[in-house]
Amino acid sequence: MQPLIPGVIGNLKDINWRRLTTEQIQDIQREHVLDWVVGNFDSHAGNFILIERLQVLGVDKEQAFRYMNDQNSHKMSLEFHPNEQYGEWEPIYNDIYK
Image (cartoon, rainbow, N blue to C red; front, side, top):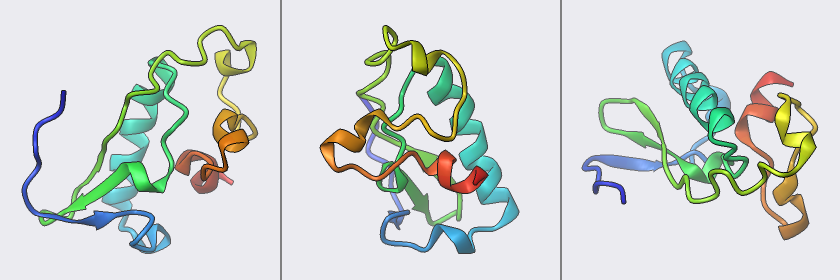
């Protein structure tokens, strides 16, 4: 369950994330730690929102722990993209760090 967040400008699929500020990229990096710990690899640009305070927040963590039995999920990798088979964008972290 997640609260309704007021003042949403849009998600990062609709906003060019390559123009984010250093602070906003740091917001995404903080989310990366959480997503990796809970095994959420569905962290594409559409699962991040920009709010009026110009803060970036991660949303949609429903795939947490989904790939815990996949040995490839046990190490951080820019190549691991299990949702590619469903036609989904790769995790935004992979793009940022590449």
